[in-house]
Image 1 (cartoon, helix red, strand yellow):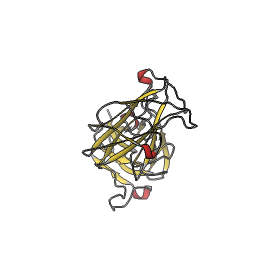
Image 2 (tube, rainbow, N blue to C red; image 1 turned 120 degrees about the vertical axis):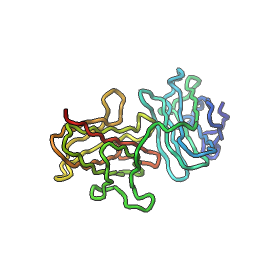
Image 3 (cartoon, rainbow, N blue to C red; image 1 turned 90 degrees about the vertical axis):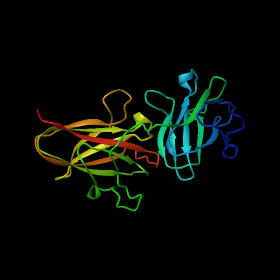
Image 4 (cartoon, rainbow, N blue to C red; image 1 turned 30 degrees about the vertical axis):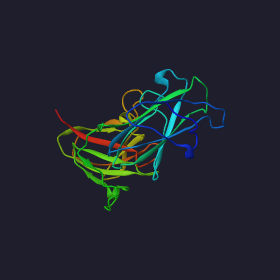
Length: 260
């Protein structure tokens, strides 16, 4: 259980990982009753931070800010739920911070919440990483510096800052009837809301914009382009609302569909 007071940064409460930490939004302040928590990891890897409120019958509409000394992100829901969760990779061993709050600043005995931070297995697989300049190499923030994308591959990338754009170039050979473009991000716990813009590389004309999947609540683009001959595409990957952070990851798979 939480221990009050913990509603300012200076009152941040340390919690343990791998167990549910429960509390209630109480008080009558203008900002409700924010709960400042932190936890320390013992190893690097993939990290899950989940808050349950609605799923436990609470009236609270919970959200949280996940932050470190270098970056932060607001998380306010997850797939088909108002309960927020993120699943992110981290190579950092250290302390992470979470500020949990009721979205409408509502308080009372009915506004309960529970939070758990845990290490988890990677929710996705990929065949190569984007070249984004973080390691001193040339970035891929413009189509003239697009990363080469092997057809049939899957890239792991990040929308690392506000208005970040990642570009990729793929060559589609003869003998294909379609090309599938599939993103995995929000559906596997990323805070990113990815959109794709697919251009004819020769004329740089927009061929298709993809914002969502094929089922309700699926924010991850999944689209197809019909082809009748060899063609090259430039693909722009970005956040639909131009929000970025070092936590905002995605994978993109591009697969050719052979002609019958």
